Length: 271
Length: 349
Image 1: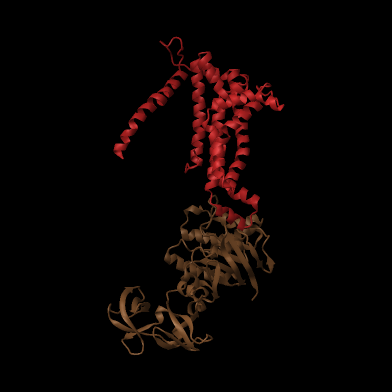
Image 2: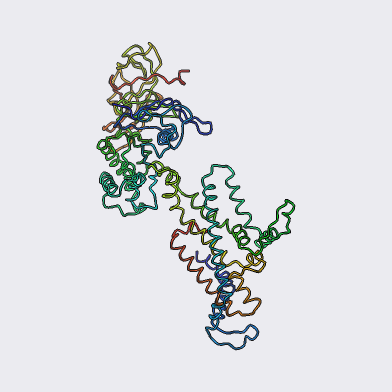
Protein backbone atom coordinates (compact mmCIF):
# COMPACT_ATOMS: atom_id res chain seq x y z
CA UNK A 1 0.00 0.00 0.00
CA UNK A 2 2.83 2.37 0.79
CA UNK A 3 4.14 2.27 -2.77
CA UNK A 4 0.63 3.09 -3.99
CA UNK A 5 0.48 6.10 -1.69
CA UNK A 6 3.21 7.71 -3.78
CA UNK A 7 0.83 7.77 -6.72
CA UNK A 8 -1.27 10.33 -4.87
CA UNK A 9 1.55 12.92 -4.67
CA UNK A 10 0.78 14.59 -8.02
CA UNK A 11 -2.83 14.98 -6.96
CA UNK A 12 -1.83 16.51 -3.66
CA UNK A 13 0.32 19.00 -5.56
CA UNK A 14 -2.51 19.88 -7.93
CA UNK A 15 -4.99 20.12 -5.07
CA UNK A 16 -2.68 22.54 -3.33
CA UNK A 17 -2.27 24.72 -6.40
CA UNK A 18 -5.88 24.67 -7.54
CA UNK A 19 -7.84 24.52 -4.30
CA UNK A 20 -5.85 25.32 -1.19
CA UNK A 21 -3.91 28.32 -2.54
CA UNK A 22 -6.99 30.06 -4.03
CA UNK A 23 -8.78 29.53 -0.72
CA UNK A 24 -5.97 31.15 1.19
CA UNK A 25 -5.96 33.95 -1.38
CA UNK A 26 -9.70 34.54 -0.95
CA UNK A 27 -9.30 34.52 2.81
CA UNK A 28 -6.50 37.08 2.59
CA UNK A 29 -8.49 39.23 0.15
CA UNK A 30 -11.45 39.27 2.51
CA UNK A 31 -9.54 40.96 5.29
CA UNK A 32 -7.39 43.34 3.28
CA UNK A 33 -7.89 46.32 1.03
CA UNK A 34 -5.91 45.09 -1.95
CA UNK A 35 -6.93 47.06 -4.99
CA UNK A 36 -7.21 45.02 -8.15
CA UNK A 37 -5.56 47.83 -10.15
CA UNK A 38 -2.82 48.50 -7.61
CA UNK A 39 -1.66 45.27 -6.03
CA UNK A 40 1.55 46.71 -4.54
CA UNK A 41 0.57 47.87 -1.07
CA UNK A 42 -2.26 46.81 1.24
CA UNK A 43 -3.40 46.77 4.87
CA UNK A 44 -5.38 44.28 6.91
CA UNK A 45 -8.82 45.72 7.48
CA UNK A 46 -12.44 44.82 8.20
CA UNK A 47 -13.73 47.40 5.71
CA UNK A 48 -15.32 44.73 3.52
CA UNK A 49 -17.83 43.95 6.26
CA UNK A 50 -19.47 47.31 5.47
CA UNK A 51 -20.60 45.83 2.16
CA UNK A 52 -22.70 43.19 3.95
CA UNK A 53 -25.06 46.00 5.00
CA UNK A 54 -25.62 47.21 1.46
CA UNK A 55 -29.22 46.97 0.21
CA UNK A 56 -28.31 44.95 -2.90
CA UNK A 57 -26.47 42.35 -0.77
CA UNK A 58 -29.35 42.08 1.69
CA UNK A 59 -31.86 41.88 -1.18
CA UNK A 60 -29.81 39.17 -2.93
CA UNK A 61 -29.49 37.17 0.29
CA UNK A 62 -33.24 37.27 0.73
CA UNK A 63 -33.75 36.21 -2.88
CA UNK A 64 -31.27 33.37 -2.49
CA UNK A 65 -32.89 32.08 0.66
CA UNK A 66 -36.43 32.42 -0.68
CA UNK A 67 -35.79 30.83 -4.06
CA UNK A 68 -33.57 28.02 -2.78
CA UNK A 69 -36.11 27.26 -0.06
CA UNK A 70 -39.02 27.00 -2.48
CA UNK A 71 -36.93 25.05 -4.98
CA UNK A 72 -36.05 22.54 -2.27
CA UNK A 73 -39.61 22.19 -1.03
CA UNK A 74 -40.98 21.71 -4.55
CA UNK A 75 -38.24 19.20 -5.39
CA UNK A 76 -39.00 17.29 -2.20
CA UNK A 77 -42.72 17.09 -2.91
CA UNK A 78 -42.15 15.97 -6.49
CA UNK A 79 -39.02 13.93 -5.82
CA UNK A 80 -40.18 11.79 -2.92
CA UNK A 81 -43.20 10.26 -4.66
CA UNK A 82 -41.15 9.68 -7.81
CA UNK A 83 -38.37 8.00 -5.82
CA UNK A 84 -40.96 5.96 -3.92
CA UNK A 85 -42.52 4.83 -7.17
CA UNK A 86 -39.17 3.82 -8.69
CA UNK A 87 -38.12 1.95 -5.55
CA UNK A 88 -41.35 -0.04 -5.42
CA UNK A 89 -42.26 -0.55 -9.04
CA UNK A 90 -42.02 -4.07 -10.39
CA UNK A 91 -41.69 -2.67 -13.90
CA UNK A 92 -38.90 -4.15 -15.96
CA UNK A 93 -38.08 -0.66 -17.26
CA UNK A 94 -36.97 0.57 -13.84
CA UNK A 95 -33.33 0.97 -14.92
CA UNK A 96 -34.47 2.91 -17.98
CA UNK A 97 -36.47 5.35 -15.86
CA UNK A 98 -33.48 5.95 -13.61
CA UNK A 99 -31.32 6.54 -16.67
CA UNK A 100 -33.85 9.07 -17.99
CA UNK A 101 -33.46 11.02 -14.77
CA UNK A 102 -29.68 10.94 -14.87
CA UNK A 103 -29.08 11.67 -18.56
CA UNK A 104 -30.13 15.36 -18.52
CA UNK A 105 -27.62 15.99 -15.74
CA UNK A 106 -24.87 15.00 -18.17
CA UNK A 107 -25.81 17.65 -20.71
CA UNK A 108 -24.47 21.16 -20.36
CA UNK A 109 -26.33 23.10 -17.71
CA UNK A 110 -26.00 26.45 -19.46
CA UNK A 111 -27.58 24.98 -22.59
CA UNK A 112 -30.54 23.74 -20.58
CA UNK A 113 -30.89 27.14 -18.91
CA UNK A 114 -30.87 28.92 -22.26
CA UNK A 115 -33.42 26.44 -23.60
CA UNK A 116 -35.79 27.37 -20.77
CA UNK A 117 -35.05 31.06 -21.29
CA UNK A 118 -36.13 30.88 -24.92
CA UNK A 119 -39.39 29.21 -23.97
CA UNK A 120 -40.21 31.83 -21.36
CA UNK A 121 -40.13 34.82 -23.75
CA UNK A 122 -43.44 35.71 -25.37
CA UNK A 123 -42.03 34.91 -28.80
CA UNK A 124 -40.87 31.33 -28.70
CA UNK A 125 -41.10 28.10 -30.61
CA UNK A 126 -44.15 27.35 -28.49
CA UNK A 127 -46.12 29.88 -30.56
CA UNK A 128 -46.38 27.06 -33.09
CA UNK A 129 -48.75 25.36 -30.69
CA UNK A 130 -50.58 28.57 -29.87
CA UNK A 131 -48.88 28.85 -26.47
CA UNK A 132 -47.02 31.91 -25.29
CA UNK A 133 -45.35 32.57 -21.95
CA UNK A 134 -44.15 35.83 -20.53
CA UNK A 135 -42.30 34.62 -17.51
CA UNK A 136 -38.85 36.18 -17.77
CA UNK A 137 -38.20 38.21 -14.65
CA UNK A 138 -40.64 36.32 -12.45
CA UNK A 139 -39.89 33.95 -9.58
CA UNK A 140 -41.91 31.31 -11.42
CA UNK A 141 -39.38 31.20 -14.25
CA UNK A 142 -36.46 30.83 -11.85
CA UNK A 143 -38.26 28.18 -9.83
CA UNK A 144 -39.17 26.13 -12.90
CA UNK A 145 -35.57 26.35 -14.05
CA UNK A 146 -34.12 25.43 -10.67
CA UNK A 147 -36.52 22.56 -10.03
CA UNK A 148 -35.77 21.08 -13.42
CA UNK A 149 -32.02 21.48 -12.83
CA UNK A 150 -31.89 20.03 -9.32
CA UNK A 151 -34.76 17.53 -9.16
CA UNK A 152 -32.52 14.55 -10.05
CA UNK A 153 -30.34 15.37 -7.03
CA UNK A 154 -33.40 15.07 -4.82
CA UNK A 155 -34.74 11.89 -6.41
CA UNK A 156 -31.55 9.85 -6.49
CA UNK A 157 -30.54 9.85 -2.79
CA UNK A 158 -34.13 9.19 -1.69
CA UNK A 159 -34.46 6.42 -4.26
CA UNK A 160 -31.18 4.93 -3.09
CA UNK A 161 -32.39 4.72 0.54
CA UNK A 162 -35.86 3.43 -0.34
CA UNK A 163 -34.48 0.85 -2.74
CA UNK A 164 -32.09 -0.53 -0.13
CA UNK A 165 -34.77 -0.66 2.53
CA UNK A 166 -35.60 -4.15 3.70
CA UNK A 167 -39.04 -4.85 2.23
CA UNK A 168 -39.83 -7.26 5.05
CA UNK A 169 -40.02 -4.22 7.38
CA UNK A 170 -43.03 -3.04 5.42
CA UNK A 171 -44.57 -6.50 5.64
CA UNK A 172 -43.83 -6.60 9.37
CA UNK A 173 -45.61 -3.28 9.83
CA UNK A 174 -48.67 -4.48 7.93
CA UNK A 175 -48.54 -7.74 9.83
CA UNK A 176 -48.72 -5.79 13.09
CA UNK A 177 -51.88 -4.05 12.00
CA UNK A 178 -50.65 -0.86 10.35
CA UNK A 179 -52.44 0.21 7.18
CA UNK A 180 -50.58 1.70 4.23
CA UNK A 181 -50.60 5.25 5.61
CA UNK A 182 -49.47 4.22 9.08
CA UNK A 183 -46.77 2.01 7.60
CA UNK A 184 -45.51 4.93 5.55
CA UNK A 185 -45.55 7.42 8.42
CA UNK A 186 -44.10 5.14 11.10
CA UNK A 187 -41.67 2.97 9.16
CA UNK A 188 -40.88 4.05 5.60
CA UNK A 189 -40.59 7.80 6.14
CA UNK A 190 -38.43 7.69 9.30
CA UNK A 191 -36.11 5.17 7.66
CA UNK A 192 -35.73 7.31 4.54
CA UNK A 193 -34.95 10.56 6.38
CA UNK A 194 -31.23 10.30 5.74
CA UNK A 195 -31.95 10.19 2.01
CA UNK A 196 -34.31 13.13 2.31
CA UNK A 197 -31.65 15.12 4.12
CA UNK A 198 -29.06 14.32 1.45
CA UNK A 199 -31.53 15.33 -1.22
CA UNK A 200 -32.38 18.56 0.57
CA UNK A 201 -28.72 19.55 0.81
CA UNK A 202 -28.01 18.54 -2.77
CA UNK A 203 -30.75 20.85 -4.03
CA UNK A 204 -30.48 23.60 -1.42
CA UNK A 205 -26.76 24.23 -1.89
CA UNK A 206 -26.58 24.61 -5.67
CA UNK A 207 -29.80 26.60 -5.82
CA UNK A 208 -28.54 28.96 -3.13
CA UNK A 209 -25.29 29.61 -4.98
CA UNK A 210 -26.65 29.61 -8.54
CA UNK A 211 -25.82 32.68 -10.61
CA UNK A 212 -26.09 31.83 -14.30
CA UNK A 213 -29.61 30.48 -13.95
CA UNK A 214 -31.22 33.50 -12.21
CA UNK A 215 -29.39 35.90 -14.45
CA UNK A 216 -30.71 34.30 -17.64
CA UNK A 217 -34.21 33.48 -16.45
CA UNK A 218 -34.82 36.82 -14.77
CA UNK A 219 -33.35 38.86 -17.56
CA UNK A 220 -30.96 40.27 -14.97
CA UNK A 221 -33.76 41.55 -12.76
CA UNK A 222 -33.49 39.14 -9.84
CA UNK A 223 -30.11 39.04 -8.19
CA UNK A 224 -29.00 36.10 -6.09
CA UNK A 225 -26.00 36.07 -3.81
CA UNK A 226 -24.02 34.36 -6.57
CA UNK A 227 -24.76 37.29 -8.90
CA UNK A 228 -23.50 39.73 -6.29
CA UNK A 229 -20.21 37.86 -5.99
CA UNK A 230 -19.88 37.74 -9.75
CA UNK A 231 -20.62 41.49 -9.98
CA UNK A 232 -18.07 42.41 -7.35
CA UNK A 233 -15.38 40.33 -8.99
CA UNK A 234 -16.06 40.86 -12.66
CA UNK A 235 -17.76 44.23 -12.97
CA UNK A 236 -17.07 46.59 -10.07
CA UNK A 237 -13.67 45.15 -9.31
CA UNK A 238 -14.41 44.99 -5.60
CA UNK A 239 -12.60 41.72 -5.03
CA UNK A 240 -12.36 42.18 -1.26
CA UNK A 241 -16.11 42.32 -0.63
CA UNK A 242 -16.68 39.53 -3.20
CA UNK A 243 -14.17 37.34 -1.38
CA UNK A 244 -15.76 38.01 2.00
CA UNK A 245 -19.21 37.02 0.76
CA UNK A 246 -17.73 33.89 -0.82
CA UNK A 247 -16.09 32.94 2.45
CA UNK A 248 -19.29 33.45 4.42
CA UNK A 249 -21.24 31.37 1.91
CA UNK A 250 -18.60 28.66 2.13
CA UNK A 251 -18.90 28.55 5.92
CA UNK A 252 -22.66 28.22 5.71
CA UNK A 253 -22.33 25.32 3.25
CA UNK A 254 -19.64 23.63 5.34
CA UNK A 255 -21.81 23.75 8.45
CA UNK A 256 -24.73 22.29 6.55
CA UNK A 257 -22.50 19.47 5.36
CA UNK A 258 -21.17 18.73 8.81
CA UNK A 259 -24.77 18.57 9.96
CA UNK A 260 -25.52 16.01 7.27
CA UNK A 261 -22.52 13.84 8.09
CA UNK A 262 -23.55 13.72 11.74
CA UNK A 263 -27.04 12.66 10.84
CA UNK A 264 -26.05 10.18 8.18
CA UNK A 265 -23.17 8.39 9.87
CA UNK A 266 -22.84 5.62 7.35
CA UNK A 267 -22.50 8.17 4.58
CA UNK A 268 -24.21 5.75 2.23
CA UNK A 269 -26.74 8.13 0.81
CA UNK A 270 -24.34 10.87 -0.28
CA UNK A 271 -23.73 10.58 -3.95
CA UNK B 1 -61.09 -29.15 19.21
CA UNK B 2 -62.16 -26.40 16.86
CA UNK B 3 -60.26 -25.57 13.74
CA UNK B 4 -58.64 -22.14 13.69
CA UNK B 5 -57.44 -22.33 10.09
CA UNK B 6 -58.78 -24.45 7.29
CA UNK B 7 -56.94 -24.52 3.99
CA UNK B 8 -58.96 -25.91 1.10
CA UNK B 9 -57.53 -26.81 -2.32
CA UNK B 10 -55.00 -23.98 -2.38
CA UNK B 11 -52.88 -23.65 -5.51
CA UNK B 12 -50.38 -20.93 -6.38
CA UNK B 13 -47.87 -20.42 -9.17
CA UNK B 14 -45.14 -17.88 -9.76
CA UNK B 15 -44.30 -17.21 -13.41
CA UNK B 16 -45.91 -20.44 -14.53
CA UNK B 17 -44.11 -22.66 -12.05
CA UNK B 18 -46.49 -24.33 -9.65
CA UNK B 19 -45.39 -23.60 -6.08
CA UNK B 20 -48.40 -24.97 -4.22
CA UNK B 21 -50.42 -27.79 -5.73
CA UNK B 22 -53.88 -28.31 -4.24
CA UNK B 23 -52.97 -28.00 -0.56
CA UNK B 24 -55.47 -29.15 2.06
CA UNK B 25 -54.66 -28.65 5.71
CA UNK B 26 -56.20 -27.51 8.94
CA UNK B 27 -54.80 -26.19 12.18
CA UNK B 28 -56.58 -26.72 15.49
CA UNK B 29 -56.79 -24.22 18.27
CA UNK B 30 -53.74 -24.39 20.50
CA UNK B 31 -51.90 -26.69 18.12
CA UNK B 32 -48.23 -26.50 17.18
CA UNK B 33 -48.06 -27.34 13.48
CA UNK B 34 -44.79 -27.47 11.57
CA UNK B 35 -44.40 -27.22 7.81
CA UNK B 36 -41.30 -29.23 7.03
CA UNK B 37 -39.58 -29.55 3.69
CA UNK B 38 -36.48 -28.67 1.66
CA UNK B 39 -36.00 -25.10 0.38
CA UNK B 40 -38.30 -24.31 -2.49
CA UNK B 41 -40.97 -26.79 -1.43
CA UNK B 42 -43.57 -24.03 -1.03
CA UNK B 43 -43.74 -23.96 2.76
CA UNK B 44 -42.88 -20.26 3.07
CA UNK B 45 -45.32 -19.39 0.29
CA UNK B 46 -48.10 -21.17 2.18
CA UNK B 47 -47.19 -19.21 5.30
CA UNK B 48 -47.23 -15.92 3.37
CA UNK B 49 -50.64 -16.76 1.95
CA UNK B 50 -52.02 -17.14 5.45
CA UNK B 51 -50.24 -13.97 6.60
CA UNK B 52 -51.71 -12.02 3.69
CA UNK B 53 -48.52 -11.22 1.77
CA UNK B 54 -49.41 -13.29 -1.27
CA UNK B 55 -52.73 -14.30 -2.74
CA UNK B 56 -53.68 -17.74 -3.95
CA UNK B 57 -54.62 -18.58 -7.54
CA UNK B 58 -57.39 -20.90 -6.44
CA UNK B 59 -58.86 -22.45 -3.32
CA UNK B 60 -59.71 -20.74 -0.07
CA UNK B 61 -58.39 -20.24 3.42
CA UNK B 62 -60.88 -20.09 6.28
CA UNK B 63 -59.74 -18.34 9.43
CA UNK B 64 -61.98 -18.90 12.41
CA UNK B 65 -64.65 -19.95 9.92
CA UNK B 66 -64.42 -16.88 7.68
CA UNK B 67 -62.68 -16.71 4.29
CA UNK B 68 -59.47 -14.65 4.36
CA UNK B 69 -59.29 -13.88 0.67
CA UNK B 70 -60.15 -10.19 0.63
CA UNK B 71 -58.95 -9.31 4.10
CA UNK B 72 -55.71 -7.28 3.95
CA UNK B 73 -52.77 -8.38 6.08
CA UNK B 74 -53.19 -5.59 8.61
CA UNK B 75 -56.71 -6.68 9.51
CA UNK B 76 -55.93 -10.34 10.13
CA UNK B 77 -55.65 -11.56 13.70
CA UNK B 78 -52.46 -13.30 12.71
CA UNK B 79 -48.92 -12.21 13.49
CA UNK B 80 -45.67 -13.30 11.95
CA UNK B 81 -42.13 -13.80 13.18
CA UNK B 82 -40.06 -13.16 10.08
CA UNK B 83 -37.05 -15.13 8.99
CA UNK B 84 -34.69 -12.14 9.29
CA UNK B 85 -36.74 -10.81 12.25
CA UNK B 86 -37.55 -7.53 10.41
CA UNK B 87 -37.20 -5.42 13.56
CA UNK B 88 -37.64 -1.70 12.93
CA UNK B 89 -34.12 -0.21 13.09
CA UNK B 90 -35.45 3.28 13.81
CA UNK B 91 -37.04 2.21 17.08
CA UNK B 92 -35.73 0.86 20.36
CA UNK B 93 -36.78 -2.47 21.83
CA UNK B 94 -39.77 -0.99 23.68
CA UNK B 95 -41.14 0.80 20.62
CA UNK B 96 -40.70 -2.28 18.48
CA UNK B 97 -42.72 -4.42 20.86
CA UNK B 98 -45.30 -1.69 21.41
CA UNK B 99 -45.77 -1.06 17.67
CA UNK B 100 -48.88 -3.20 17.17
CA UNK B 101 -50.54 -1.90 20.35
CA UNK B 102 -49.87 1.74 19.44
CA UNK B 103 -51.49 1.14 16.07
CA UNK B 104 -54.51 -0.21 17.90
CA UNK B 105 -54.53 3.05 19.92
CA UNK B 106 -54.36 1.29 23.27
CA UNK B 107 -53.66 3.77 26.07
CA UNK B 108 -50.03 4.10 27.05
CA UNK B 109 -50.44 2.70 30.58
CA UNK B 110 -51.87 -0.54 29.24
CA UNK B 111 -49.22 -0.68 26.53
CA UNK B 112 -46.55 -0.47 29.22
CA UNK B 113 -48.06 -3.39 31.11
CA UNK B 114 -48.49 -5.55 28.01
CA UNK B 115 -45.00 -4.85 26.67
CA UNK B 116 -43.56 -5.68 30.05
CA UNK B 117 -45.44 -8.99 30.10
CA UNK B 118 -44.23 -9.87 26.63
CA UNK B 119 -40.62 -8.99 27.48
CA UNK B 120 -40.88 -11.09 30.64
CA UNK B 121 -42.04 -14.02 28.54
CA UNK B 122 -38.99 -13.76 26.27
CA UNK B 123 -36.74 -13.01 29.25
CA UNK B 124 -35.59 -9.59 28.05
CA UNK B 125 -36.93 -7.26 30.73
CA UNK B 126 -34.50 -4.36 31.16
CA UNK B 127 -33.65 -4.12 27.47
CA UNK B 128 -36.43 -1.61 26.67
CA UNK B 129 -34.17 1.31 25.82
CA UNK B 130 -31.66 -0.68 23.75
CA UNK B 131 -31.35 -0.11 20.03
CA UNK B 132 -32.25 -3.28 18.18
CA UNK B 133 -28.93 -3.39 16.32
CA UNK B 134 -27.14 -3.63 19.67
CA UNK B 135 -28.77 -6.99 20.37
CA UNK B 136 -27.39 -10.42 19.58
CA UNK B 137 -29.13 -12.65 17.04
CA UNK B 138 -30.87 -14.64 19.76
CA UNK B 139 -32.09 -11.50 21.50
CA UNK B 140 -33.36 -9.98 18.24
CA UNK B 141 -35.19 -13.20 17.60
CA UNK B 142 -36.90 -13.03 20.98
CA UNK B 143 -37.86 -9.39 20.44
CA UNK B 144 -39.42 -10.42 17.14
CA UNK B 145 -41.44 -13.05 19.02
CA UNK B 146 -42.41 -10.57 21.75
CA UNK B 147 -43.46 -8.02 19.13
CA UNK B 148 -45.79 -10.60 17.58
CA UNK B 149 -47.31 -12.22 20.67
CA UNK B 150 -47.98 -8.92 22.44
CA UNK B 151 -50.87 -8.50 20.00
CA UNK B 152 -52.45 -11.74 21.26
CA UNK B 153 -52.99 -13.21 17.79
CA UNK B 154 -55.06 -16.34 17.38
CA UNK B 155 -52.36 -17.75 15.16
CA UNK B 156 -48.65 -17.08 15.17
CA UNK B 157 -46.70 -17.73 11.98
CA UNK B 158 -42.99 -18.42 12.34
CA UNK B 159 -40.84 -18.46 9.20
CA UNK B 160 -37.66 -20.39 9.99
CA UNK B 161 -37.06 -18.15 12.99
CA UNK B 162 -34.23 -20.23 14.40
CA UNK B 163 -32.28 -20.59 11.17
CA UNK B 164 -29.64 -17.98 11.99
CA UNK B 165 -28.91 -19.12 15.54
CA UNK B 166 -26.09 -21.42 16.65
CA UNK B 167 -26.86 -24.98 17.69
CA UNK B 168 -27.00 -24.50 21.47
CA UNK B 169 -29.12 -21.38 21.28
CA UNK B 170 -31.37 -23.04 18.73
CA UNK B 171 -32.02 -25.97 21.05
CA UNK B 172 -32.78 -23.62 23.95
CA UNK B 173 -35.14 -21.59 21.80
CA UNK B 174 -36.91 -24.73 20.55
CA UNK B 175 -37.71 -25.61 24.12
CA UNK B 176 -38.69 -22.06 25.03
CA UNK B 177 -40.95 -21.68 22.01
CA UNK B 178 -42.75 -24.88 22.87
CA UNK B 179 -43.21 -23.71 26.46
CA UNK B 180 -44.41 -20.32 25.26
CA UNK B 181 -46.96 -21.90 22.95
CA UNK B 182 -48.33 -24.01 25.81
CA UNK B 183 -48.43 -21.03 28.18
CA UNK B 184 -50.12 -18.68 25.70
CA UNK B 185 -52.58 -21.17 24.35
CA UNK B 186 -52.37 -19.91 20.77
CA UNK B 187 -51.76 -21.91 17.60
CA UNK B 188 -48.30 -21.84 16.08
CA UNK B 189 -47.57 -22.51 12.43
CA UNK B 190 -43.84 -23.04 12.21
CA UNK B 191 -41.84 -23.34 9.01
CA UNK B 192 -38.51 -25.15 8.98
CA UNK B 193 -36.28 -27.33 6.86
CA UNK B 194 -34.68 -28.87 9.96
CA UNK B 195 -36.32 -32.25 10.60
CA UNK B 196 -34.99 -32.51 14.14
CA UNK B 197 -36.52 -29.14 15.00
CA UNK B 198 -39.84 -30.27 13.55
CA UNK B 199 -39.85 -33.52 15.51
CA UNK B 200 -38.86 -31.85 18.79
CA UNK B 201 -41.42 -29.07 18.87
CA UNK B 202 -44.53 -30.03 16.96
CA UNK B 203 -47.87 -31.58 17.75
CA UNK B 204 -48.35 -32.14 14.05
CA UNK B 205 -45.76 -32.23 11.28
CA UNK B 206 -46.67 -31.49 7.67
CA UNK B 207 -44.03 -32.79 5.28
CA UNK B 208 -43.96 -30.94 1.97
CA UNK B 209 -42.06 -31.42 -1.26
CA UNK B 210 -42.40 -29.57 -4.56
CA UNK B 211 -45.64 -27.90 -3.54
CA UNK B 212 -47.36 -31.09 -2.50
CA UNK B 213 -48.08 -32.32 1.03
CA UNK B 214 -46.33 -35.67 1.41
CA UNK B 215 -47.60 -36.60 4.84
CA UNK B 216 -49.39 -35.12 7.83
CA UNK B 217 -49.00 -36.74 11.22
CA UNK B 218 -47.60 -36.63 14.72
CA UNK B 219 -43.79 -36.61 14.96
CA UNK B 220 -43.81 -40.29 15.98
CA UNK B 221 -45.98 -41.28 13.03
CA UNK B 222 -43.88 -39.34 10.60
CA UNK B 223 -40.70 -40.90 11.88
CA UNK B 224 -41.87 -44.45 12.38
CA UNK B 225 -44.43 -44.77 9.62
CA UNK B 226 -43.26 -42.65 6.69
CA UNK B 227 -45.77 -42.91 3.87
CA UNK B 228 -43.29 -42.63 1.04
CA UNK B 229 -39.64 -42.58 0.08
CA UNK B 230 -39.39 -38.80 0.28
CA UNK B 231 -40.60 -38.63 3.87
CA UNK B 232 -38.47 -41.58 4.89
CA UNK B 233 -35.35 -39.95 3.40
CA UNK B 234 -36.12 -36.46 4.65
CA UNK B 235 -36.93 -37.43 8.23
CA UNK B 236 -33.81 -38.90 9.72
CA UNK B 237 -31.52 -41.34 8.02
CA UNK B 238 -32.94 -44.56 6.75
CA UNK B 239 -32.18 -47.62 4.73
CA UNK B 240 -34.66 -47.98 1.90
CA UNK B 241 -34.56 -51.39 0.20
CA UNK B 242 -36.58 -52.85 -2.66
CA UNK B 243 -38.74 -55.67 -1.40
CA UNK B 244 -41.70 -57.89 -2.24
CA UNK B 245 -44.75 -58.23 0.00
CA UNK B 246 -45.37 -61.96 0.01
CA UNK B 247 -48.57 -61.84 2.03
CA UNK B 248 -49.86 -59.98 5.08
CA UNK B 249 -47.18 -59.78 7.80
CA UNK B 250 -44.55 -61.32 5.51
CA UNK B 251 -42.06 -59.37 3.40
CA UNK B 252 -39.01 -60.41 1.45
CA UNK B 253 -35.92 -58.25 0.87
CA UNK B 254 -32.17 -58.69 0.65
CA UNK B 255 -32.67 -62.36 -0.22
CA UNK B 256 -34.46 -63.30 3.01
CA UNK B 257 -38.00 -63.41 4.29
CA UNK B 258 -38.96 -61.34 7.32
CA UNK B 259 -41.94 -61.14 9.61
CA UNK B 260 -43.36 -57.67 9.73
CA UNK B 261 -46.38 -55.78 11.08
CA UNK B 262 -47.68 -54.39 7.80
CA UNK B 263 -50.66 -55.66 5.91
CA UNK B 264 -53.17 -54.69 3.29
CA UNK B 265 -50.90 -55.07 0.27
CA UNK B 266 -51.56 -57.19 -2.78
CA UNK B 267 -49.76 -60.46 -2.70
CA UNK B 268 -46.34 -60.21 -4.37
CA UNK B 269 -46.66 -56.41 -4.60
CA UNK B 270 -43.33 -54.63 -5.09
CA UNK B 271 -42.68 -52.34 -2.12
CA UNK B 272 -40.07 -50.09 -0.47
CA UNK B 273 -38.86 -51.38 2.87
CA UNK B 274 -37.61 -48.82 5.38
CA UNK B 275 -35.31 -49.77 8.24
CA UNK B 276 -33.97 -47.05 10.54
CA UNK B 277 -30.19 -47.24 11.14
CA UNK B 278 -30.60 -47.50 14.91
CA UNK B 279 -32.97 -50.48 14.60
CA UNK B 280 -30.43 -52.83 13.04
CA UNK B 281 -28.50 -55.00 15.49
CA UNK B 282 -25.10 -56.20 14.30
CA UNK B 283 -23.81 -59.62 15.28
CA UNK B 284 -21.13 -62.11 14.24
CA UNK B 285 -21.81 -63.94 11.00
CA UNK B 286 -24.97 -66.03 11.38
CA UNK B 287 -26.76 -68.34 8.98
CA UNK B 288 -30.21 -67.17 7.92
CA UNK B 289 -29.55 -63.42 8.24
CA UNK B 290 -28.45 -60.69 5.86
CA UNK B 291 -24.66 -60.74 5.97
CA UNK B 292 -22.16 -58.19 4.71
CA UNK B 293 -18.74 -56.59 5.08
CA UNK B 294 -18.04 -53.50 7.26
CA UNK B 295 -16.99 -50.86 4.75
CA UNK B 296 -16.62 -47.74 6.82
CA UNK B 297 -17.02 -46.54 10.39
CA UNK B 298 -17.42 -42.98 11.67
CA UNK B 299 -17.54 -41.83 15.28
CA UNK B 300 -20.61 -39.58 15.76
CA UNK B 301 -20.47 -38.88 19.49
CA UNK B 302 -23.33 -40.89 20.92
CA UNK B 303 -22.91 -43.71 18.42
CA UNK B 304 -20.83 -45.06 15.57
CA UNK B 305 -22.14 -44.80 12.05
CA UNK B 306 -21.25 -48.06 10.35
CA UNK B 307 -21.61 -48.71 6.64
CA UNK B 308 -22.08 -52.37 5.79
CA UNK B 309 -21.95 -53.48 2.16
CA UNK B 310 -24.32 -56.32 1.39
CA UNK B 311 -23.55 -57.29 -2.18
CA UNK B 312 -24.06 -53.91 -3.93
CA UNK B 313 -26.37 -52.36 -1.35
CA UNK B 314 -25.13 -50.07 1.42
CA UNK B 315 -26.78 -50.34 4.84
CA UNK B 316 -26.28 -47.54 7.38
CA UNK B 317 -26.26 -48.76 10.96
CA UNK B 318 -26.05 -46.74 14.16
CA UNK B 319 -24.51 -48.70 16.99
CA UNK B 320 -22.64 -47.99 20.19
CA UNK B 321 -20.40 -51.00 19.48
CA UNK B 322 -17.27 -50.39 17.46
CA UNK B 323 -16.63 -52.73 14.50
CA UNK B 324 -13.44 -53.26 12.53
CA UNK B 325 -13.39 -52.39 8.86
CA UNK B 326 -13.37 -55.51 6.69
CA UNK B 327 -14.98 -57.82 9.26
CA UNK B 328 -18.02 -59.86 8.26
CA UNK B 329 -21.23 -59.14 10.21
CA UNK B 330 -24.88 -60.15 10.19
CA UNK B 331 -27.81 -57.72 10.39
CA UNK B 332 -30.56 -58.45 12.92
CA UNK B 333 -33.89 -56.78 12.07
CA UNK B 334 -37.02 -57.34 14.18
CA UNK B 335 -40.61 -57.32 12.87
CA UNK B 336 -41.37 -53.97 14.52
CA UNK B 337 -38.33 -52.36 12.93
CA UNK B 338 -39.50 -53.05 9.41
CA UNK B 339 -41.73 -50.47 7.78
CA UNK B 340 -43.25 -51.30 4.40
CA UNK B 341 -44.30 -48.53 1.99
CA UNK B 342 -46.08 -48.64 -1.35
CA UNK B 343 -43.88 -47.66 -4.26
CA UNK B 344 -44.62 -44.07 -5.23
CA UNK B 345 -46.68 -43.59 -8.38
CA UNK B 346 -43.93 -42.40 -10.69
CA UNK B 347 -41.80 -45.42 -9.94
CA UNK B 348 -44.53 -48.00 -10.49
CA UNK B 349 -45.34 -46.49 -13.88
